Amino acid sequence: MERTFIMIKPDGVQRHLTGEIIHRFESKGFTLVGLKMMQVSRELAEKHYGVHKQRPFFNSLIEFITSAPVIAMVWEGESVVTAARNIIGATNPVTAAPGSIRGDLGVSIGRNLIHGSDAIETAQTEVALWFQEEELISWKPVRHSWLYE
Image (spheres, one colour):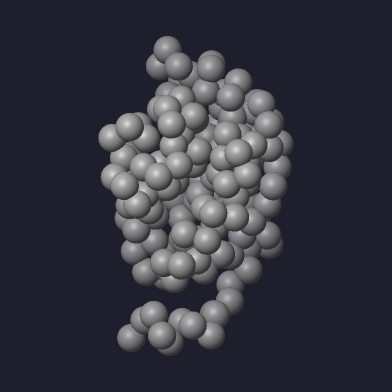
């Protein structure tokens, strides 16, 4: 089973979309194995978004992600990284597919509600950055046999 990192950004928390977003992943059949609400430190934000350090939007991104609480999550399931990206939708909500989180709920690229790992390797790095191993719980929901052969 793969794992992926998902973060509901400050705008998603402030707009009270946490339950709606979690419901979409649960409805797809994925298993939540880690969850915490937290105020992101500048240090953690800069590590997480380090690939964008040279981009002109880096400082505003760091200011935004540290401006209010986020919901950090780890989800588990078959092909969860790719499926989560489809559930989330394109970065720009204007072009995100209807039915995706950003397509249905997002308004602008700067406030696009959610982050999701973009590859298995990235997911492993992000999960380790945001969660200690003892914060993750491996468990098998009873629905598992109804989802996977």
